[in-house]
Image (cartoon, rainbow, N blue to C red; front, side):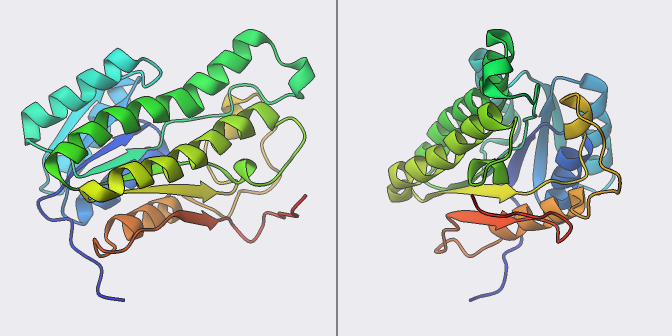
Length: 247
């Protein structure tokens, strides 16, 4: 396998970039040479991330976006292309557990929120940016799924269904976009040091997760820097502290 490629001159977009994992992904991509658009609902968070990227000597644009809204995703790609002229990398990182409970105990409102945040948002981003990449004849889309998509734990079924959809979407879109030089990868991580437990109303683990934001960033950076003739269909990984027993 050849050497990893520099991202010099590339333009990347990272959603969910106001939180630690998304911010770290965006910064590591910038360190590799790319200009980066950072997106999230929290304005202060993405403005801070953009400022940090600019301190590295790269250009950055903060675009407040609710990725659950297709119109706002359309606006994000419009601003990115107006500013930088192209989009080479999309990292669909935004997501979360919302409510973790047995399926029969979920409310319809919670189910809709889980699907909207974890699947609809990825569909909207992949559609919109995939169209731009198809037109320019190149690009890399990285969709963040979860180990829940391939294994089973009680209470995670609805979340897992959404994340399974992300894997299927990624596979299908690769077959559609491959003829146009666009790659699509599903990243399938295990539990990590994020705000997942807090945001989903779960108890924090007794000991910190071994899988850190910088580990996620390294995986995504590696995928983006792979030679253009190589497609990474899936990338599964988790910390050695997590016990994963296939069902």
